[in-house]
Length: 177
Image (tube, rainbow, N blue to C red; front, side):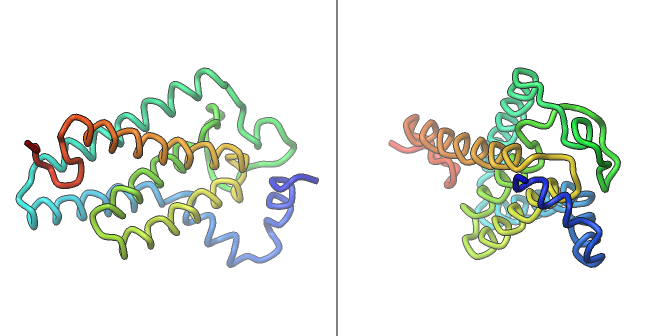
């Protein structure tokens, strides 16, 4: 029995855990979007550097786009489509690899980490829990979420290098000499 099967078989044994992961899987996207918007807005007000918005949004947009392209290339069906069980949440039978929730949760958490390390650590833990919840509810395999997280980290690092190489300080929002 693999890790995913152990997780799927655990469902239904402790209702509070089922509920916890259900809520994370179902509502985490909205939480991350709202939190990200508030934190970036407050950072812009604090620093008076409007360029933050374009940089952060470009990183998120690139991550989402690459994730969607990979999904179309890999075409991996979701666990509830392939296996003999149902997911705990309503979900389309769209492709699952890599996990968009994992990629987006981690890219937002990494961005927040750059703005505020203490708060960012909390978001990184939350991104991990959100990713685990997607496996728990039956809409992803563990490799889907690992790939989504790795994709986010790689794109984040590449974008940092790109902006730094081009004399554009990604997290200071200014041009250098």
